[in-house]
Image 1 (tube, rainbow, N blue to C red):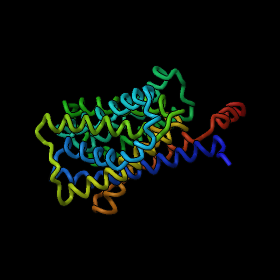
Image 2 (cartoon, rainbow, N blue to C red; image 1 turned 90 degrees about the vertical axis):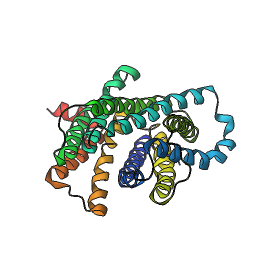
Image 3 (cartoon, rainbow, N blue to C red; image 1 turned 180 degrees about the horizontal axis):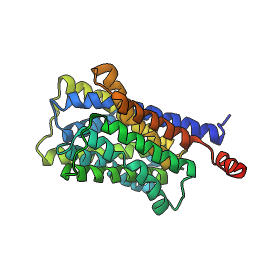
Length: 299
């Protein structure tokens, strides 16, 4: 029996929580890997591995790769590649805390772009949830007290925030009605190609990985890339871009939690407060529009 709309939406939101968990766990993995390889090479290798693993299934589904699928995959994949590239370039000039906070601006950019691009107005609950989650992200990112002044790295990271928002918005536009596997595979193809060009242009292409870089590529390729972005693509067919952006504020929260549990890094009271605000924002976004209408009527 098919799931009801509400149950399907809940399943999609829970899938996005799982995606945030995978991505949050990747921070420490990437940090270790970058001691032996470069951002460009790591980006290419993880997406090339994902592409290679899924290639046999893509061949089986080759009949579904028509012009609409190719076009939507190119758009979504381009936003995704540009987000990765600008974030990596920005991190060379700014701190990880500032990068996490500025990238998280997409949680407020997505509702605005939803109105401008998709011509849809997010619910009051989603808007309030986005603001609360953004405040939580500020506290979480500023728990180390490293915000400082605005620089070129911050500008690149701000561009990353727009590209992240563009990726979420474009998936919100194209995911419904399209095969999630094929759309995810197209994104992997675009990012892998972009990563290859980037790595070759900088002279950083290296297939001879070993140690942490090799294991990081395998983990990132199979879990954070295949399960993560395929999961996001499937989920966004059933939930809104705004809710997606709000749920994804869990990513740095999971990252901080893993760092606390596994690496012994301090989170602090400010970080805990930020995490609680993010959870509050997600709960607010889960409130059904009908509940808001009832509340207004009683008022």
